[in-house]
Length: 262
Picture: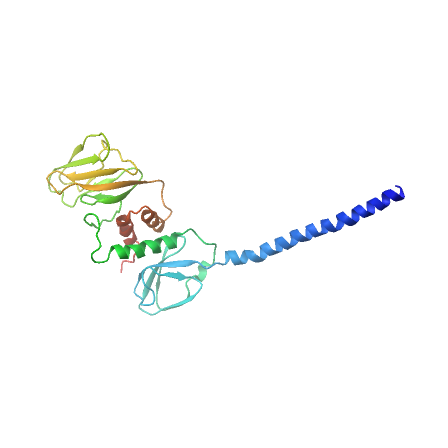
């Protein structure tokens, strides 16, 4: 190698060597920062949603930070929904953070906020003077459709079963879809049966409205069908899904199943 070529090689090493070093150093710094920030992201405290409480310190509908210490007196009880959709009942005396042995984890979906929004808005709808569509009915299965109920109704698995309180005699069930060319569908609801499957002659369609009544009974009630796709991982997630679709009566009914029995 000539002297000229050596000088050129030295200049090249001088310019490229430090550049490579700085590039490598930059990668190391970025990696270190990422590792330093990782615990901050993963250490976000879980939240808990109060669905039932006998403690004056925790009202139904409240959101509790799992990292903060709480106090529940002896004889008091607080029932919570966790961010993964499970329920947890704490009976006093209890002092400490709710997070306990559950540890900390990354933020879940918006389940807690959705439930809180539903419960708060449901309080408004339940105030004296608030108008609700249809007659209320308490059923073990919120996906049973009571005769006489109007408004939005969420349908799971593409089918629905109708329910009536009085099954003492045969009745003619009349169903008609609004806005369609189809005639009314009429089927006999036999005596002794409180439940009957939705008539096959009136296919359920998402977003469609149907008039339902029993001949000789009250006037027809209109329902707005919402078809739900797939299932929900927990009851709490199902309540949130119903609330999101504005099927509030069903969400309210399903919420009752999460409450403690005593």
